[in-house]
Length: 168
Image 1 (tube, rainbow, N blue to C red):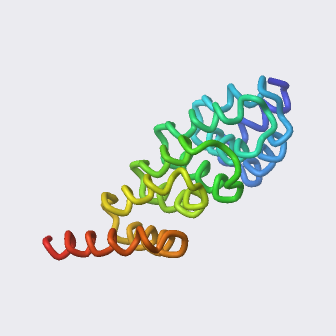
Image 2 (cartoon, rainbow, N blue to C red):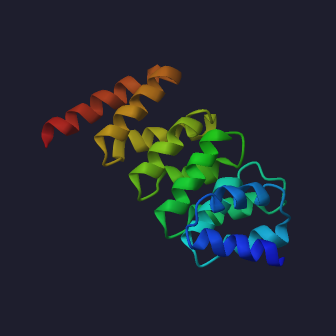
């Protein structure tokens, strides 16, 4: 890493004002040699910036990095990735979105719903989430999304879910 990039990364790790935006701007045009090590940086703040710029990045490693970041232990990193994917729903593959639909963090799951709902191959995964997600708020959002795009699927799932809720 060049000295100036190292200094910028250190500023992000210390949570200095505007440093994350500066790093994001720098990383949007970074090559794989600069981007890849930062996806494993010890600072969650640095990894979150990498997650923010990975979708749509031109580096050949961008999809592989996004998959790694989707498995990051820190919810902030996965939230940053889900937010970026919502802004660029054409990036990535269905497996990446499916992974985030199953995330332990409700906020990550909520953020990935709209872009995931635009992918025809994920309809089954969305139906499973509607049946099984522990969050009533998320299930309601899923029902609305599926109702818009696939009403024939959402009504039976909604009736099934309502029956389960009544049993509790």
